[in-house]
Image (cartoon, rainbow, N blue to C red; front, side):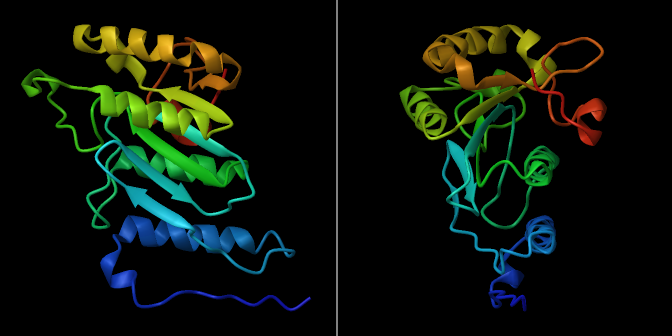
Length: 194
């Protein structure tokens, strides 16, 4: 079977280097699947509450609830976002990924002390929409959850997740079984989900 590659050109100068590398890695991954002769990004969508990437509509979706995933338009991806996307792409289980910040939006400043209202009803609406569209929900907010401002929010999110508890998994440190962030060195090689 002859494999044809269709690559859209003309937008690469608008994409960050990290996103270009991620897309090319996805194209390379297609080489391992001779029955698939294309890679198509159906949707790359970002608003203040959620970043979603869909590349295979037939595959299950995954929501990752974390701290500070970030996409600055198409100009830059932060390490949190890159590590999550790479892990999920390597797993070959998901065709869509929703990255949701535990707090108000994916452009939240890192110093939460300066936020008057770190989340609102729109945050919860987007969070629940992503959860309902996903087959798996991964909690990956890490040690941040021990901070006083974060504890209350985690409790609220856990309450919202109760009807979906069968699809909830935690990214855990295998040594301690505590939820960890994707930036944790133990999460960079292989994810342990429980």
